[in-house]
Length: 383
Image (cartoon, rainbow, N blue to C red; front, side, top):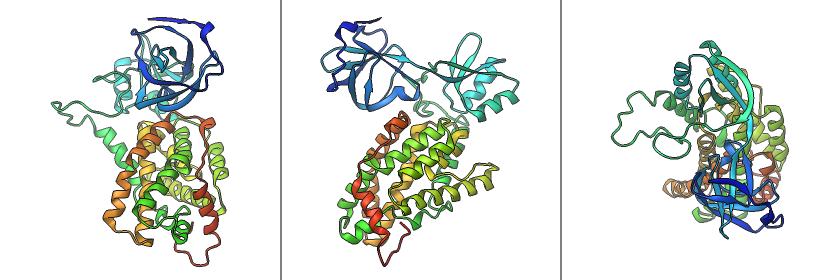
């Protein structure tokens, strides 16, 4: 493979260029341009990118793909856009590397293994743990190229040891983290999620949502084009170490109505209060998705997984609101929720690779319904 970039062929106006395939490192030669992406951004399915030379193009892959340094995105006209790992904030870990690598791996944290050090993404919880283990820890800025999964190319999205492997207690830490996340986002966690309809009550009153089909379309649009997507991005950014106060302020500013703002801030405050009480945390009150992302920092779970569970809980709450209000049968409601699973997974994967510039929505019907809800004389839900 050659990393030669032929800048003579760069077309800065090629907004309609599209990449629908990936060429792995060592299988291609010659690139028309190059994109430099951080680790999280190298996991994507559908996203608009602008390369260093100005080439703008849409990535539209069949499934979420983990790109590695040296891979290339293949445009539909056959040209290649090289993929390079961007420098990002990391922790360089030194000491008893074998022992430290075991503890890092036990937290399911991506890790780059070098001759004299380990590199992980900055995480204050992991940093404290490693220092307690006697490790030397230094903040550095460097490209992040962690080890891939043992059973295939790219990053490990779970802990699949194959059908003939006895996992024994190998999944204990990950399982405990997932159980904690599921508890946080379960209907029984005291955030009063059952009391909010996210404007759906007004849509049901007007007849815009009157059954399973219309409910599925409504919720799908909220997830893909509206607050579901924005909240998932905010959660992922909080999980990856973003400024919590700024993200929470942005979440409040994105709320399309007074009630929507109260919904995210009140649930976030209730979530934080409970997590602080049961886990000994000291998180400040935050908007709900930011609070979940902040609390999940120490779980060692991947951003797409945390975002997917959050979005599933969000969708499930609204489905249950419709079950009670329309009324919609429980079986029909579960069918609607199952139909939303592909959208939930796609939005979660996209959100994990997004940045602040990617936040935006176009679910105007949902926003207008939330505003109309404030004027309803008879209301079951708070929003």
